[in-house]
Length: 291
Image (cartoon, rainbow, N blue to C red; front, side):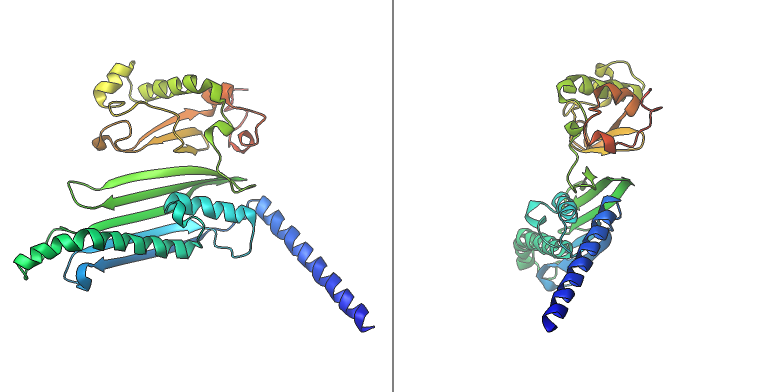
């Protein structure tokens, strides 16, 4: 009798686990994946002296922190941490990755700046740098840009200042399939064989955006002087089309800032691989397709 009760208990537990697993998978497949917000803000001063310059680091980002093992959540988390902090932090837990990255930032700062300032202090013990001299600033921000059904578009913004006339700023965008947690590559839904035609479309669209009729005119404005337009992986799936982002110094001088070129779904229609799984994630309508 006791054996039968134990067997029944195992059956009930197995049934409960199965129902829980099914409900969880259903929730994931319907896009109900929760991203929590994590943040850190601190300053680390040279020589541990608060009157000295410091490394100021600020991190705010959204990331799945669900501790239950799931391949979709694990993949989403990996891709976010990889793009925000780098591959060496991608397999960590989000908070651990954030703290480890901040510790590495402080370590680099102290190793680079303390020896230099020590020489200044040897000559003048009362010297205290002013105006941000010897101070570093690092700001990392990660957020969901767009989310619809099984598509999630994530954006990372990073600002850093380590001295000089100005800091450096760049953004990194990536698109994720919530069915799998994997990155959506550009040629997962566009015909790679037509890459040259698509690149020509980028130039044409930029000319239209800037109200000019030739690439020479764009060059005179500064576009393309540091590099040609290309089908960058730094792209964003939007409700209106695919936006390609080019960071400062990538194709134009710093003063021109970030350059964004958007190709509409109507223009892209002939190049979209309609039968691909990725194409089905695009937020487009038949009207936008011109059908």
